[in-house]
Image (cartoon, rainbow, N blue to C red):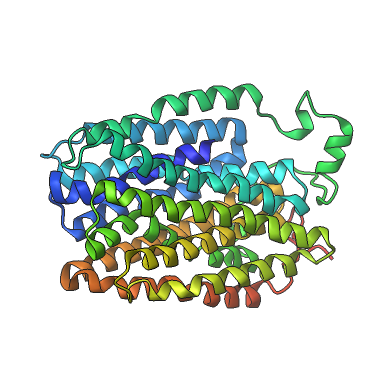
Length: 414
């Protein structure tokens, strides 16, 4: 639920962006890039800070803090006036990015606490499917509220505040760690802990220890394709507008198709590696096999700009988005496969910071290229988007060939 709310808040600008650019604020592509970069700067910094905070104070309080911050700044978008221009939007996007940075560290830590390794990828795929549910909801409801001229755009950003408040109520009412949850039986707890390495300490590991192990950098490498996902999320509507002339309501169906495919990939990708593990495959082999298949499915998106048929282009992007989310379901699980629970949120946060930083560089470059060369600049974006996954998989193989788990002191378990 929280991840769905997260992505509704995050996706609204991706849907409304072309309308706000062309009819309300008259941004250049570079100014929109700065707005998108502001979100990612905060997301990168927040990933480090919020991951550490969540490991320190726990999921119950840390996740509540995260969604409270992002909901506040999500609604503050509606207060931006034309006189504030792109700088006003950049400011509230910064706050949104800071709050949203806590979502995935909290989610991954929750999965690590509540599920054995053989189920984590499937469960991760389920919660990660919320990203695509949110990305589908945004193009469904935004055209119902906002007119093609951009009138009433403010109401789109105000809509999710009530859902966030309801979620906080449910979370605080129901969540506790398995070891102290009053409604959990001993048999259930034993099952949850059945393949976990015992941890005798509870304090958070210091950053210098986390950064000194190559597995931290291997996980960070898996987050490099985050920039590709940001491209689909924040620039996908602009590509369809600039390449095929689609306006706000015309964008709805293509974006829904893309993110429904992505939703399917998220669940299927997590299920597939979990299925292989239950059949007796080693964890590292199951995860990497799934990620290799994902990388191959994504390759055809390099041709998305080479067709004049918008539906062929949408289909290629949908296949790639599906492959990315299947990749993500397995990628996120690597942190809990390898690292002790008390370090999971910090490692996920560090990896997210790396992914967001690459996204910042990509935004700046793409905005500059589009203002200079027009829609033809998207060719290079899709070329990189299709090929980066195989490169990253090679890096993972070098840094983590067998993905050996680490104990509470970050020593490899023999």
